[in-house]
Image (cartoon, rainbow, N blue to C red; front, side):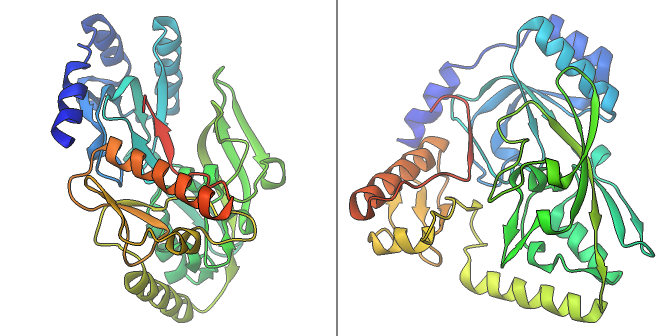
Amino acid sequence: MQQAAQETAAEQKVSVNPEFVKKLEEIVGREQISLQEPMSKHTTFRAGGECDYFVSPSEISQIKEIINLCHKEQLPYYIIGNGSNLLVSDNGYRGVMIHLGPSFAGCEVDEEAGIVTVKAGAALGGLVRMVSRRGLGDMTWAAGIPGSFGGAVVMNAGAYGGELKQVLMEVTWLEEDGSLVTAPASELGLGYRQSIFKHSRKIVLEGKLKLEKADPEKLMARIEALNQTRREKQPLEYPSAGSTFKRPEGYFAGKLIEDSGLRGYRLGGAQVSEKHCGFVINRDNATASDLYKLFQHIKAVVRENFQVEMELEVELIGEF
């Protein structure tokens, strides 16, 4: 099955357009462009096909120019950070992946005011450890979340009773027309795994956090305790996207899956984790198709057993 899916993806490869590549080079330079880039290298599922163009801009002006070029050439584009909540089809992505990488990963700390300005590409876990060591908290709940800060804003990331909206002051983003907008958190539609940025063309660039002063030793101890809990209860040894499904109102996704008899259920290289049923893992060289089919199977079985509609947290890109 895996080999067949890979062969299908290979057959559907589209050769890149040299003229388009030349125009991209004029914007970001050749070293910032990868062609027919395997998206398995850029997602925490470690699965998925190739995108035609993978571009890593270093300035906001370059993002604007790339988007303008995509519009002119009628090519789709997608913004990617750490790829922690993303699954790209085995058939790949016939467009431009714009990667907000190291150039968009800095932060500034005003310890006296407790205000931290964070760029979208910053790793959330690293950010949490840094502010905790400096006695700013409490974001310890986010220490084990593998995504970028920008992705955390888009999803209003949460864990262990904490949510980003509890500490988020404001966000600056880029509109599709090239304008920059800054707005307070109260205007961002932040709810359970929701924001105005989901399924929109708004590109999160940075945000400000307001953190209370706290004992750094206690914060770091809390981080270690939570990480120990994660190691014991979550399948961190396998590629995954964390919690695969949103929590249905009145239920827990993992318990619904477990009570449906799906603990350890395997389809190709994809598996419902035996350690935590809320996680679908890449157990053994799973294709994106394996993972997607397992998502669908889980949804169907839970629907049949409990009349509950499961909703994916994972973003699906491309044709499935």
